[in-house]
Every structure is written in C-alpha cells, then in structure tokens.
Image 1 (tube, rainbow, N blue to C red):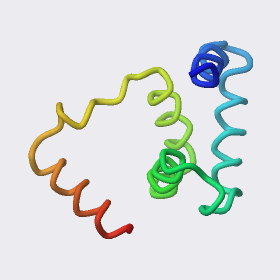
Image 2 (image 1 turned 90 degrees about the vertical axis):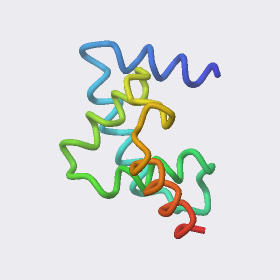
Image 3 (image 1 turned 135 degrees about the horizontal axis):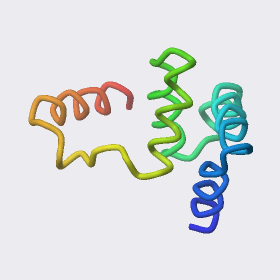
Length: 89
C-alpha cells in the first residue's frame, strides 16, 4: 500500500514521473517471470503486447486508477480475459 502511494505520487510529478515510468517498464521487461508477483506478471504480459510508446501510457493510467474495472467492460471483453487467463496457467 505504501509502495502504491509512493509510485502514484512519483508518477504525478512532471519531471520525475515519465522517467520513473520508463524505468519501471524496463525493469518489468528484464525481470524473469518467476521472480514477479502474480499482479506484476499480469502487468508484464499486458505490457509486452503493446508498442513501447503505449506501454508507458498504459502504466501511467493504471497507477492513476484510470483504467476501467472488469465489471465495466462488456461481456465479450470479460470472456476474452477469462480465456486468456486460463490459457496462461
């Protein structure tokens, strides 16, 4: 919880925020999957599918809490996410 608050605070800073987010994306790319928590594994998989310029933007939105909740997504999106999570096991 403290880490999340600290990360959100740093991400909001106009000078430090973009650099911090790029470093975080690079760290997620370099870290082996086995050493990550389940939440970070999911973030790593999600970010690996995006082009580099969109990775930072998505991470920024997720730290700010701007991403839609799964309940707000449509039925087809929820089903696709469920299929994808089953495939990854």
